[in-house]
Image (cartoon, rainbow, N blue to C red; front, side):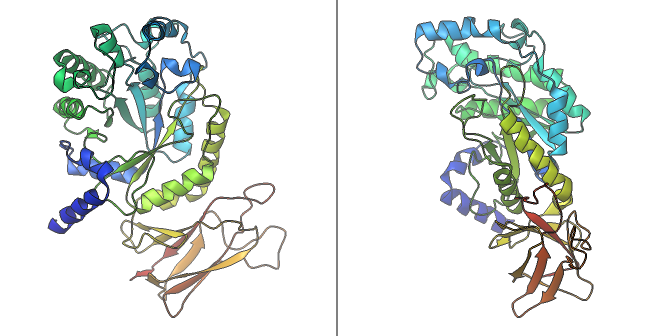
Amino acid sequence: MKKVKLLFFVFLLQNPAFGQEAQMLNLNKPAREQWFAEMGFGMFIHWSFDVQLGMVISHSMVGASDDYLDRYVHDLPKTFNPKDFDPSVWAKAARMAGMKYVVFTTKHHNGFCMYDTQTTDFNIMHTPFGKDITKMIVDAFREEGLAIGLYFSPDDFHFLYTQGTLISRARPEAQAQNNPELNAYVKGQMRELMKNYGKIDLVFLDGLDQFGKTELAKVCWEIDPNVVVTRGAIPTPEQETPDSPIPSPWEACYTFGDQWQFRPTNENYKSAKQAITELIEIRAKGGNLLLNFGPDAMGNFPPEQAGALNEISLWMFINQEAFDQTIPLQTIHEGHVWFLKQKDSPTVYAFILEDDWKFGERKNFSLKSFTAQSNTKISVLGHNGKVLEYAPDVDPAPQIKNNAEGIEISVMRAQRIYNDRKWPNPIVVKLENLKIK
């Protein structure tokens, strides 16, 4: 245990971005953190009424003129009416993509509540839509069997605006520690969220106000000691993955584009392959990937996001087994081959991140970390190893043998996934009864 703590301390010294979070109070139960760490993949959803203009969520209020703030606060909510919103579509898509939990932005820094609250009229019930979006999302994702996570920020620009306090990110008076009214206000909102929506599995506390996050975390644990607080209690690197594993549960959160909320123009989306590759690396390092989606003003996932999510679902349909009840190895990868291991057996999954791999082409890979035994078996997830379409004389069976350094595996890309046979995503090789060095 002392060695683990020492390694974590060294990691924090080398990665100061994580150090601030590490100072936060953590009363998560170890068993519940372990449960969280095994879920692996979640859907983040950033959405607020200012999506109507395709702007950065919340932050345009900082430094804004009085006229801008007046129109932002009083006019924009009057036109927010996402008539196409159907959370069951989002929930089904998340489940098909292998996601095990959702985290929804109930209130971002702008202070607009996407739920029915008694604390302020600045909420979704006072828009033309007039329905509790948070409840709809919680119910739909719970129906699909996903764990429920709520994002909440103690930073509240609307509260500062109505209080007559200059809106800022770093000024002391903008933070709950130095603003007793704000402190009491956000605690009341947190109690509503923890009590009005059934069992809440996860809470993600954002914002610069570390004191505010700690105070809110205490509220959550007081109401439900089994809730897992992620940001605010454990490392949650944003838009980056650590170079080496963190010896504690952690979660990396990434956008699908450049912006958290939907942006209709000037956006640069990741490919599904990039997201899959990120997921593989993060899981091999023992973390969770919380991948963000941003619905538009009508309540739809834009085609670029929906299409990539569908591609991830197709890849997961083939390879989901490799993420169920698997854990990292001490050797997380060799070159472009990454590893996970079945929790209770000597079965290893090798994720081969190889570019330009043609249909029907065989490639060989040497791996130093393993030795094959007499009962070792090799297979490619999704393929029977017996047939290459339209090539009855070709043997596509994967092969494994020991060599001077470890093992050599020989694998063919033999399953036709696309009509043009150009499937760009990683192959996963299952290696059973393998001796791990």
